[in-house]
Image (cartoon, rainbow, N blue to C red; front, side, top):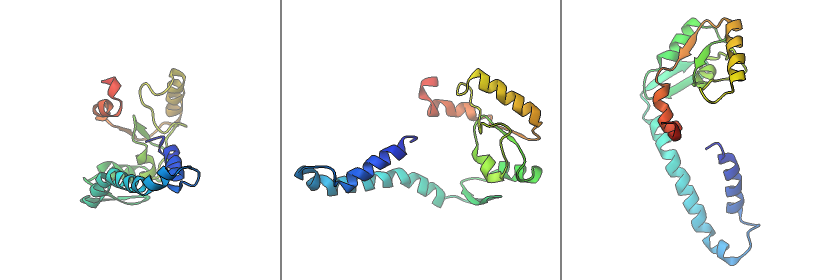
Length: 154
């Protein structure tokens, strides 16, 4: 997914097809375009259906967000922390910074175990200590996500 912008560029060149020589590609091109469109539609369908079936609306500082369930975290942060102030979201949910119009107390938006160097960890701890962050959001269920996000770390 992180490399998708590069692949999209190549896909665009292939769909354009002006630089691809040969009669075979010109004959196959309509099928290739159809296949690409259907494949992207199938990738998008679950996300689109999830949004269309969302039952709750969360009123965030950045606007209204449709969600499958009520999000009390956004409500809590907005009730207890002014816009533009610092909070710490640990280990990884940087979207809350955007939704609540708050900022991370470090130059890193997240800290995941094993993803940063020991020096970065020490730097972040010093910055957090100096900032005296009033609210820390800890995602206790993060460890359940590791096997699906990083299968080799089961």
